Length: 203
Image (cartoon, rainbow, N blue to C red):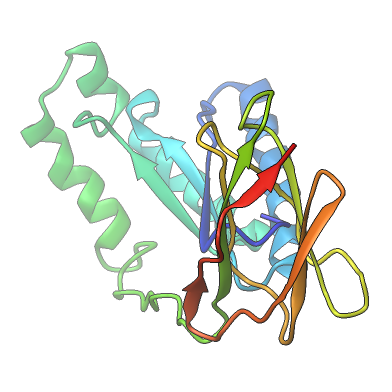
């Protein structure tokens, strides 16, 4: 999140609302996520809930608590079992789904009116995707640090198992890309696109 890799961060907050300790854990996760919106306003912070673990009232209550915490939104995962009664076999999905839908989208429901979800715009995108090669040692877990024109770290990430890495949102102007104290560049990421320089050979 802080390294600007995401547009939407959905934290799977699989806590049962009717279990006091777990309800507190959900509140703590929401409290952790809410300040991240200020730190990275371009990343939406969403609390994900496993609604197959809940009765319907608990699912609705978690949405209210997520809203009150100031997150961007709430997401419910169900694995085709929209509440705990279906999960236990006491009721069927066709029996339960209309009830839950009415609680969420009916009059005075949490989602009574359709929300507007804007696709993240490409304007902030100034990205670099790069691959490293190595003379010896693993390709993965190499620290990659783009540095701005003042030598300040603009982001940090790690190479994957194939030696690839990427950063989505870099500052305006030229950057140096440093891997294992070897800096190359300068490169100037172009707006609305991904710059792909030649692979960097490491010893």
